[in-house]
Length: 311
Image 1: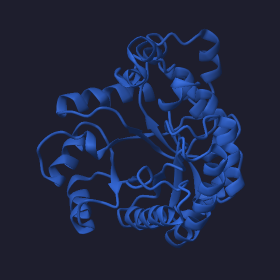
Image 2 (image 1 turned 45 degrees about the vertical axis):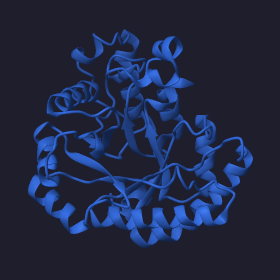
Image 3 (image 1 turned 30 degrees about the vertical axis):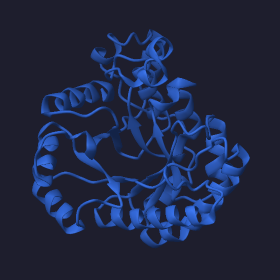
């Protein structure tokens, strides 16, 4: 999506229009109710391409062959970390030879040098890094940079993180406008913006069409339900990350153990989640896996799981 198209779409609050019914294959094993099925009928179909994080590819191959591998397994895109580890020309050559797309990148420095840090020099380092990522993703033919907006800890208060990170993001807007690329803020376990209402307000206060959300479907299961977030954030969602989470594993084995569950085996109610995505008319175009990687057989399994979820 180019800048003009995004600004046009961001100006419209999308209502509940349309999608073809989810197949019985999706609904039956995941126990969608008859009332949910009736609601899904008549909704407009949302097209989602499958992508995955580059670090998930654990085969010992060249960059081009890694891209070819995941393309053969049914993925249309790869998400790189940025600033990128390879020369841009090498990445573009691998992209051309493989037919893969590179729709988004994840900034590398938003954790180690967060935009919420009280030290202006630390914030400056992250701002410069994100600016580089905006140029990277433009050169790669994508449109979105994932950025963690801030981190709250014993040294940084919630209110301080809120004010400081918003100021830093506003400093990034000229770089976004220069490149025409989007800054998408992700919900992570950073003790910050842990309510969908607050997340909505945060970006609305920044009030720029190139600043929105990269919504992670699995991350909120620790303290909420992704379908609630989706219906609140609506058109503010630019891209989607997919992962699974088990509250039972979290409670019985430890907090981070909750992520150690395959797609379709955790607590996401996928028919309801996908219904919410359809209801808001999401037009970001991509569903990117951010789960444990592996060899080609493991990645093939993830690709098939994503096919079932997309339905």
